[in-house]
Image 1 (tube, rainbow, N blue to C red):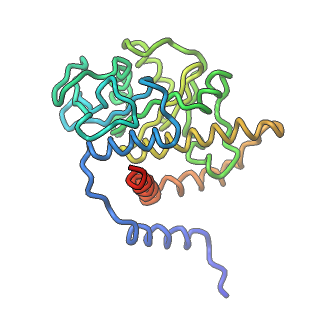
Image 2: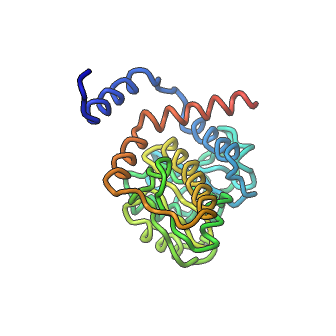
Length: 252
């Protein structure tokens, strides 16, 4: 049997995933509603503290879950479009005032189209201990050189300065752990931001549990980088999101 390179199998898998993992026909608000319920389904609910948003086609505006609802209650009709002063443009209700810092992240990251912020349990444990993520296992590699850490809490993010601090701390990273606070993930699409939010909580849970056995050791850089790129392939991200959507459908 011929010994083929890893690149061969990577290219083949990528082509086959593009062929066999179908594309969904969900609207943006339908996708946002699924994303919110997925966050609840995976244990990221924290009362009204979390936020989810997606950049609007209208310049300087975004869609977000109307304030007063939990992630588990979200339907497509519960998402409103707001402008840069959080005035409601489409739909009924008000935005969570803490989504103001999303404006600064969108401004600093032109290719970012969705933002998720949660106070999920295990990320919050790392945040309370002021501990950054250590990428020490394969499922954590989507955050290899791609998860920033803000060591000092700037306070409740309802003003502009918090947005400046958080967006600058993120740099070019897709995700960030906010000390004494929680997590923030971004994506080219809602599916990617959701995928990262779910896996960041899993990564934090793994780190907290692994430390019972001693210090965690980072993976070799070249292998972690390879796995990072593989696990963030759009076909894998969207295929995983579709699976979570089916789980949500089955539970309703």
